[in-house]
Image 1 (tube, rainbow, N blue to C red):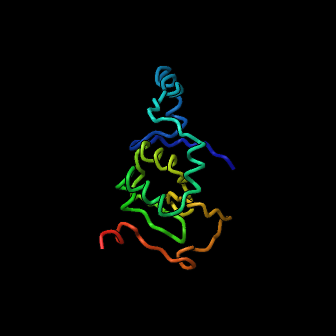
Image 2: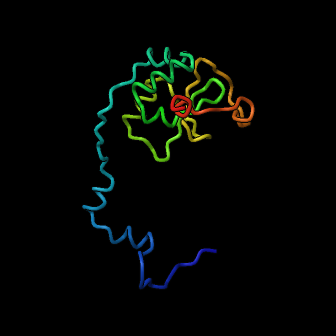
Image 3: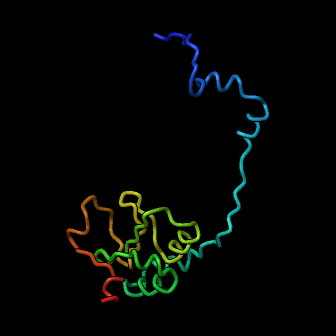
Length: 142
């Protein structure tokens, strides 16, 4: 059963209908106008990206070390794949460089992943248990 709310709010924000009815036309126009964002990133060379996705693990790690050393420090090798997990969302330029190197975003694992030429169908199990993993930045330092 629907009822009309007759109480007047004395604290906090007004109800949604009250907000809409009191909005002046200039606010409504500015809210509906699209905001143009400038995209300063270079376009991804899809042909080069496809070639990069077939590179072996060692070459992917070398490219990552030379082009994105901060991402290399976070890189984890799981089986033949390379995963990079950031604590916070990286800048758009870094995401673009990862994509150009052949990485893709895995929403389930919250990581950038590179198949290193080893393409397989998705799995719900954790590959760490099956293949093991290591951090190459730790191996070089030792």
